[in-house]
Image (cartoon, helix red, strand yellow):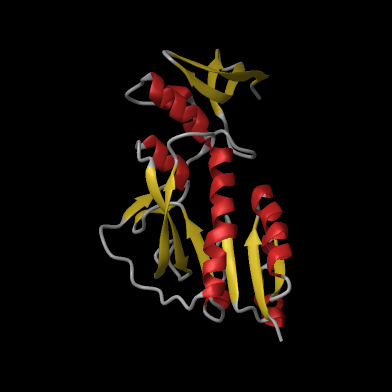
Length: 233
């Protein structure tokens, strides 16, 4: 009888990679996908009885009756315990930290505080947020999740100084909130917010018009990109 693997995720790039992953492993495992938080309930999971539940990108609290009864793994884009909490990519880039880790951790009751299975080097120095998320997703599905399926990994306690990231809110996407302004920091600010469903970098004109910036590239001593002007509500 094949083991069951459950993956809970919400982003298109992860969902697409799940189906590619399924093609490769469906002869060895029964693979299931959850994309709606209302479906992540104990009875549903109990009926499947998965060996692992993987969370490549999940924005909601994982119920304790699930992580207490099943092995739940989150992939977090910081070198834990540095960077627990929300908006990890944006907080890394705004703090000019470009060499980071994807930490595979066991879910527990506190956010991102669980035991660590392993860490994978990851670079966020170039590309839009969406490009970086797609790259992280590819690594997760092609390298990290398969590692669990091939090896018995014993997690270890987090060690070091705990640093907490706060989840960013849309008002923080205003370019006027940027400190220590330079061309490189403007580039970072625009690209770190450039992903589907994320509040893009913007400026306001007389509180009437909102200019949103995206698709930014460096070109010597200037930045080139795209913008949209939206009537502010």
